[in-house]
Length: 196
Image (tube, rainbow, N blue to C red; front, side, top):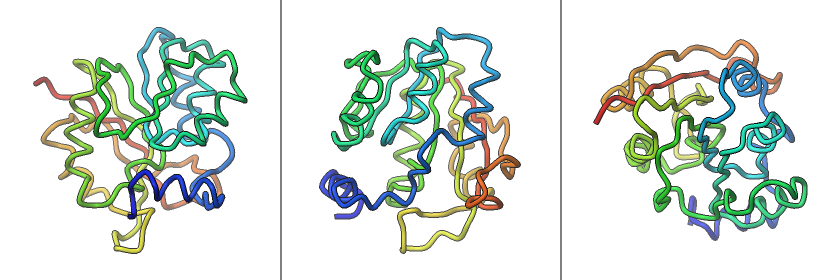
């Protein structure tokens, strides 16, 4: 059951949301704040309550899409952001998403929530979803990979090996501005889609 819709619906119903920090993470906020263009088509997969999507929307980014497999968090997001376009809230399995042409995809505790066997599928799907030269950026956890997740861990070498066939590794390094509970356990990365 781990990883399917029923699993995540149950986590939200029981309020077992250890990954939810209650606002946008500092590394992603600082990355967004330096973006030069507001017309980017942006996806936030595994958006949960949508703190990143909400922040982007408030900053004037109009083409922001928030995706989650569970309806509950996106319904909560809609209540908090009634002016956010409803057709840009996507209740779907990430692997079944049919949108494409994203300029930017933000990763925040989504990759680590997937079963490790789905990681290569994630990489391929991200490559498909992005426009030419599109960017996948965000945070990965840096702790040992075990079967105890989610969250499931990893390390720099593992991530490089997984993504390098499909992406130019522009940056992957220890996040200097993680929130205190995650200090020393997050890697900030910027990957650029390789041409098909």
